[in-house]
Length: 237
Image 1 (cartoon, rainbow, N blue to C red):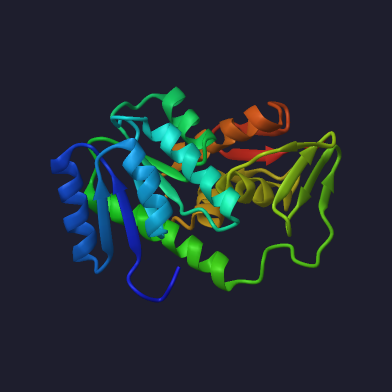
Image 2 (tube, rainbow, N blue to C red):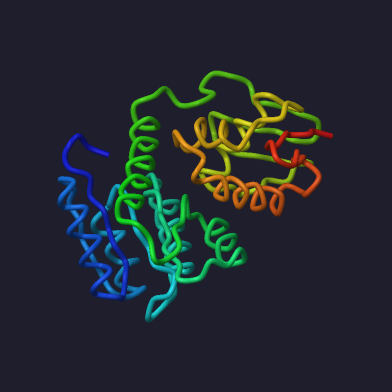
């Protein structure tokens, strides 16, 4: 991300919602582009190279989940960073949310939503991008973390369990590293939000829960222990 105004791609087929988002982002001094269908979203992500993507799930042509998959694949094929994706969904459905996170979305919001909260969420994602761009790569020069049958290569951002690679999204990787840095120690949802998402309040605890479920699906359900009412702990074999 450059020091100029952040560029946000809004992929939304409801013109009124798209217009409201663009106006609010422009009021923040950002540059916003909008397209109204899935194929156009994939093309715009490739040509614009936005800093952020706001992506509706229900889109004509191809849905937002497939758009997100293709954006991830484009970045991997071209060897460039993938912009964080915030997904918008009309249904507060846990399955939809988990699928969205599983294809690489970094955050999600359920319609109807507050424009103020949308901007706040996007600012958090931007801070994470800027931190990653300017900081020394996490784990550079350090040996991989080996916890039982789990191996985390922080420099290469790769994860293996029983020598089989698990393909994690950037947010899932950061969450796993946070848990692995204090194995068998219970970390509260609030601390995870602060350390991984850079959120100062507890409004996104469900985001933590959804990402934990995605990690369990990819790495095994027994690896992360839930302490009800408190948080989570990594329990390596």
